[in-house]
Amino acid sequence: MKSYTRRETIAFGVAVGAVTLLSPALAFAKADDAQALIAKFTGGKTPVEGKVTLNMPEIAENGNTVPMSISVESPMSKDSYVKRVIVVAEGNPRPEVATFNFTPASGVAEASTRMRMAKTQNIIAVAEMSDGTYHMAKREVKVTIGGCGG
Amino acid sequence: MADAPKPRVKAPKNAKKGDVVEIKTLISHKMETGLRKDKEGNKIPRNIINKFIVKFDGAEVFSVDIDPAISANPYFQFSMKAEKSGEFEFIWKDDKGETYTKKSKLTVN
Image 1: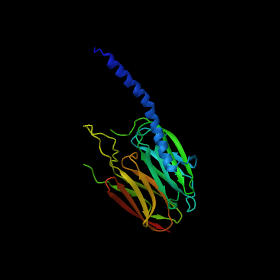
Image 2: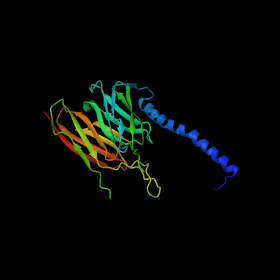
Image 3: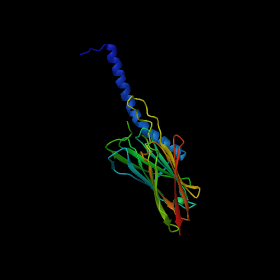
Image 4: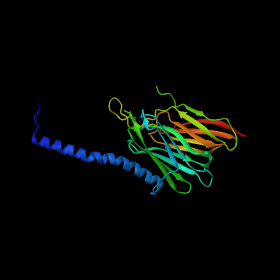
């Protein structure tokens, strides 16, 4: 049984304290990253909840491939259409997931894909409309086996 | 051995004017995120399909800016309004600057 010097014990205590202080900051940093990305997308405007539907399973069994689809209410006419939709993951190593760029030729503002989720977290979709307004939807998806590789 | 990315498209050949048709696309690709490490602990460099573009008769109608959080073998399903006959061109671009394409004709009556 090794016995630690006083110096080693104090150093250890400082290290544990530092990590404890850092951990909640790291957790919040991820949600902040997601919010910063959204703010960049909207030019600082706050998106309003509604018009956007984010379809995802309540529980994703495999974080490597989670179905995700977005749908935005819009006539998709030349005068009123969805320009783009950004999807953001609050708890992934990086928040960006994809940006869908639509035109009136899309007919409906809908798209489906499959995404990677590192763990249970909120996924947010923000739509930019041709009139300069922003709408959003958010949902929590539980993940049983995370999928960010390695 | 990595095979060249293979794109696959499921799109209708015929539609009535004004119909909204559904298109499904898939391309085989590892979508290496850049976060994984190999057995020696070295980071495996990022290599993903980063853009998917759909053109109809040369005009861009839909596209996706893709980040590493999109799963391997990227799958996209989306819609198109059938207004006139023409040809779709589906384009995938990866980090290395490679481009993969597939075409599909649509007859609208």
